Amino acid sequence: MHTAFVTSVFERLMADDVVSAEQSFVAVAGGPNEAALFRSLGIADATITNLDTSQGEAGAAPYPWSRQAAQDLDFADASFDWGLVVDGLHHCPSPHAGLLELYRVARRGVIAVEARDSRLMRLAERTGLTGRYEVEAVVAHDGLAGGVDNTPVPNHVYRWTEAEFEKTIRSFDPTGEPRFRYAYALHLPWQSAEMHAGRRRRLVLRVAEPVLKAVTTVAKKQCNSMAMIVEKPKRLHPWLRTDGDAVGFDPAYRTRHFR
Image 1 (cartoon, rainbow, N blue to C red):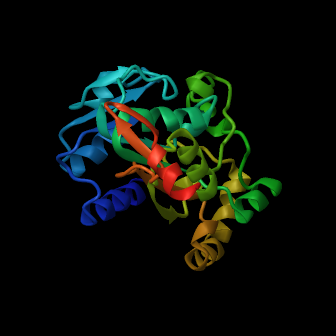
Image 2: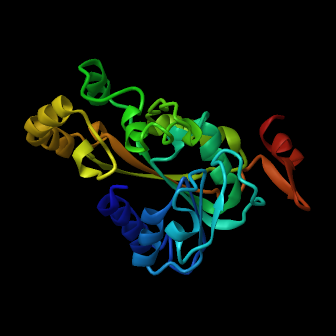
């Protein structure tokens, strides 16, 4: 986890009264880093889940932990105020399913920090400076885990755009207009203790680091890491109404607009 970036995202959300330490959180694909984050922010009500059992309850302490796949959580709808995932969706067989499952169990919204797709990242792929598959994560687990669904098979690094994130959420929840927020950071391989970038790649990126920082300072969307925040709709679209617990089309809207 790029702790400084994720912490800054939370601090900004707290300053804007979007998130508070009194709310409840669930982190998927989480572990000691998420536990440390929650502790540092004074968050008491949090649950951490992961398929990786190597650290389990001990790694999540003092928060409860359970072994769960991000795309198939056993929590009821709206069980927590917020869902959190940091660099975990790209380990799912379907990153979109993982995102929407997190959205389902959240009452207020989702905070997802994932890789961002951009021209700079596509250039890095073509020149071999970054991979399409996260082989390094499996190497870091001695070839036994760390890939898709924590298997030894390296996962494809799914990179998101803002438009894709928004279309995915709006398609899943068409009842109202959500609010989207974004933050960006440049995250280079040697900045993660668990990331084993190849020797040539590390050398080239170290030489290129000043240029990359200059470019991404001016063009934030060329950063390779993006925090995607969605707040769930606070009101229905004008063509909808509630009937008990159900949401349906409002006939009065047709009368007003389709005469």
